[in-house]
Image 1: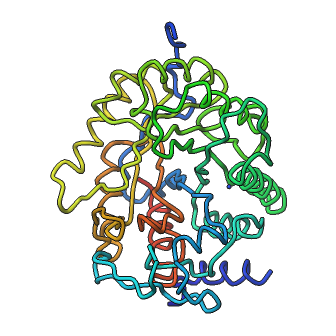
Image 2 (image 1 turned 90 degrees about the horizontal axis):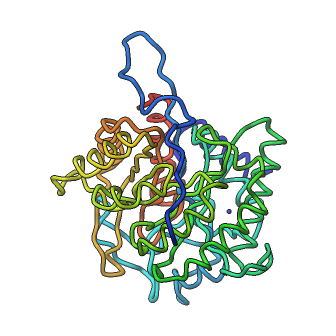
Image 3 (image 1 turned 90 degrees about the vertical axis):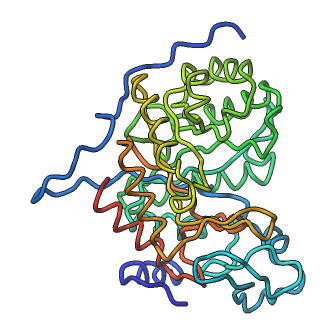
Amino acid sequence: MKPRGVWLAAALMSVITAGCGTGPAVSQQPTHPGSGTPAAVPGVSHTPATVYVHYYLWWTVQHWNDKLGPAYPYSTAPLPGSIDAQGCNPSVSYSGAQIVDVPAEGLYDQTQGVTFERHVQLASQAGIKGFLADWQGTGSTTQGPNSSGYNSRFDLMVKTVDAYNSAHGSSFSLGLAYASFGDYARPASMVIADLQYFVSRYGSDPAFRNGYSPKPIVMWLNSRKYSPQAIQAISQAVEPYVYLLGDETAASWPNDGRYLDGTSYYWSTQDPWNNSRAGSAVSELASLVHADGKQWFAPFIAGYNKQLMGGTCVQRRGTQTLTELWQLNSATRPDGWFGISWNEFVENTYLEPSKRYGSKYLDALSALIKKGS
């Protein structure tokens, strides 16, 4: 399917042809004005919403091979499978495939800077403020940009954003989505080593400038799943140097919030159709965060489907799920939005242009951003 939307089609073509003890007292005063967006007034122009989107850094040639399997015809890169009209019940067409869609631009390689440049241009022209780059370091106090594939790709992404902003006079921003990869017992010392490396190498890099803090944004994914002792120790070590956001719920925030500057909630399965608490779960969390004088970043998805891996499905229903969750979560008066995701094809939360959907979801998100929240 060809990408829809005049601006996005033009942008895509142009880029194709041309990343213990008492914890510290975390700042209670938000540096971004207000704790939400006031109600729209008829006849008054809207302020565009501030949106960051989670961005994954694992798409290398090997990773595509792992997810598409040995039978997939890589030279033509067709759709690897099918789904129903609502975005559920997937079926693969090639033995070993674990995904049913691929990017519109083809199987890109994130070891190449041009990949990041294309994505930054598409996102920027859609009105997205920045990417939250998913990363975890080696845990070593002596690590560098060449210590792992993740470190190398993250470093390349930062350099590409800096170069893009310099060339275009733009201010596309990065934040760090610090990943756990399911290891919530990882020693606090290794997490601290990763984040201290991040601060020392990127803490003053212009790619991480943002409207919320003079410090770089770090969202600690699955923060609530770490032990209280680990949360306390890690915050004490790094919060003075980063704008530390959690991944919390209303149940965990009362315990963890003292160690954080704010939070989002990586709720990739928020289902407005089949979960009666889809709205109240985020509104309760947002109220607690704002009551503490801290900042709340609302999530949104266009859909979710992990059925091939034994998981569940949240129907896309065209763009209805995206617009319904935007409306639902707008009621929480978010200080910003953290979208899920640019390029998660295994869980099917991707918003980037794809062979199946074209630019439908990026176009829809762009319209929501311009409308405001």
